Image (tube, rainbow, N blue to C red):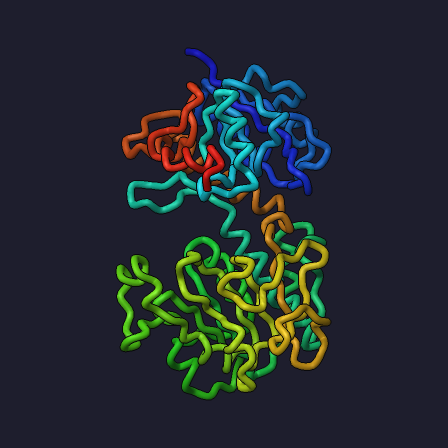
Amino acid sequence: MSVTHIGIIREGKIPPDFRVPLSPAQCVQLEKVYPNVKVTVQASPIRCFADEAYTAIGIDVQEDLSHCDILLGVKEVPMAQLIAGKTYLFFSHTFKKQPYNRALLQAILHKRIRLIDYEVLKDAQNKRIIGFGRYAGVVGAYNAFLTYGLKSGAYSIKPAHLCADRKEVEAELKKVVLPPDFKLVLTGYGRVGNGAREIVKLLPIKEVDPDVYLHQQHQEAVFTHLDTHQYFCRQSDGGFDKKEFYNQPELYQSNFGAFAQRSNVYISCHFWSSKSPFILTQQMLQDPTHSLQVVADVSCDIAGPIACTLRPSKIGSSMYGYDPHTNTEVDMHKPGAIAVMAVDNLPCELSKDASEDFGSELLRSVFPVLLGPDPDGIIFRGTQTTLEGQLNDPFQYLVTYLDGLE
């Protein structure tokens, strides 16, 4: 039986990313499930799991991965570090024609690399099978309460990136004190929204139906979780048709203003298309009846659906103030200012937990079809480039992007 060599590459993108596709224990598990697989880890001084954690349980750590057939990373691989003729799995951020990564995809084709992009791996129902979204939601929701504590002065909790792991994050949440009239609204389901729910549900806050949230008085802290049809409506008659909305979003408008009027904190975890209407507009934020103090924009679409998200924020400096009347950044403690949390790499704040969660998805959903039968064509449909230096059939639309024509 021939051996398939799988390598875990050192993350080379700047700023550095501490995550890894597989933890030490998961590397051992992979070799156990697939006896013909041998894992090699490239040495790294910054990875959230130290080199010694791998070698201690028998995983080889070395600099040279040229013997490997398949190479796994997380973020974009610097062009100079790409090894020709290999199969790579990482987030390339090219399938949406991102201009800043055009040269990377050109280099991948030039070096005859087979690129399998995590972001486009989908099952037979066209649903993504892997991502870091859950921990984006987990950390984003935690940061929402961190920000609310600082904005209100009611309590103080440790930033997530200073916590050792999720267990410590959950311990910190016990310090959160919410007033009886506290109200929180959450948009978006999927991995991100459900990850945020995990944190919200750990707090003394009751979930209520959106109509109850809007129209009844409450004597305890409450939150509501909205799906798309609950914050968008057809312009002509206020109705909603899911298929029509996704095909013709220009026919719709946001009715989120009613929730902005009644919420102290908004956590946004939705998927948003540039063709869709904005959700939280500047006009809504200029309405004197809005009660928002904190917006935690986990989705973090700049110049997008959340008007107060002027820029991404960074780990260690995760929040800024927004003045809705001037549409400018201000001190978040200024009267009338909204505190905005818009970190664009949230899972990095809990790198070990996020990596282990991602590795579990790799083991459950990706390796079986990567190393075995793939009846639904998951790997084929997620393969952007081939070992022949060509775009794979599902990605032929990238030709003009590669040529610099769009």
